[in-house]
Length: 367
Image (tube, rainbow, N blue to C red; front, side, top):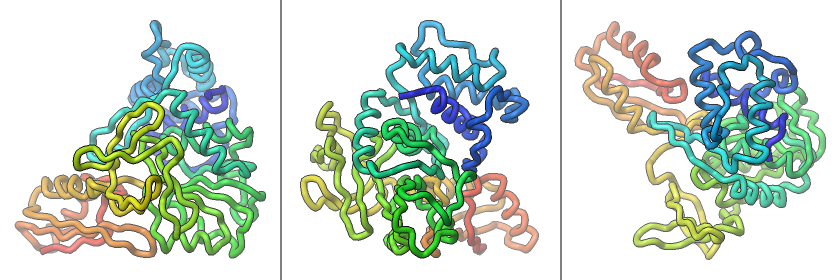
């Protein structure tokens, strides 16, 4: 499942996570040999500590009796070789990290056998694909399955956005993206893209956006799942219900509808409210925890409200989410103890310090 090339891609994407840098789809570092983590990738000593911790966790290196001390090796390719040797025979699983919307990132362990089962099914869904074009990082569960596992299974290349002209894609290119990417991609796509395949996940597409993608001639498949479950279901048009992957089933457990793995019999709670239509189809309503997807990030409005209310001079706060041009934006109404112009300017500065970019309200009203 893991080779030298895929391990290197995963490591470089994990380095992005360690430094909170966005995935830009630039190919250079993935193919360049003899890179230094410090001089070429640009990690400082504190970032290296965090990065080595992420790497040990993701690749499950602490399963080994004598895990390698990665920090003594300054080169990217040295880490690749150590991890390749560790995974050749000894390590049977990988760990993935949840989004950490509320500040509590969870580590989810999946066996390679479990992951391989999904990769095999995805290979049947996208058997026509001739190359993968990733707009997502490889080290989350969605990116791993579609941009590490699938190309290895289908024996097709990964071609980065920096290497292609989006208006002149090779036939049967498979674009791997999220709802956040599609409005931007549609600005650059021609009106007729009949031989392009695509897949979207991480949150449900607005029906209007799905239809806009389809209007370009793109054959888009939407996947439903989570880090905890991996993929559970898919739909191939905006009008379709979601269909369970063949190895999942529904089971009612007391007052909760659960997803049941037919092979292991494991029951997993669904994170969303759904309307079950048949034994293997459903429509998706909304997340049970009321989190929303903003700019590709799962976002907890209650958590954001708590952070805002901790800012000095703020006495109360109400948040809402509004769909504008197929994107969700956060709106805030903030009550201040002292509500003059200088105070409002100061609060806006403090909001930028307290919140991540995707958590920032696009519209702020004071009262």
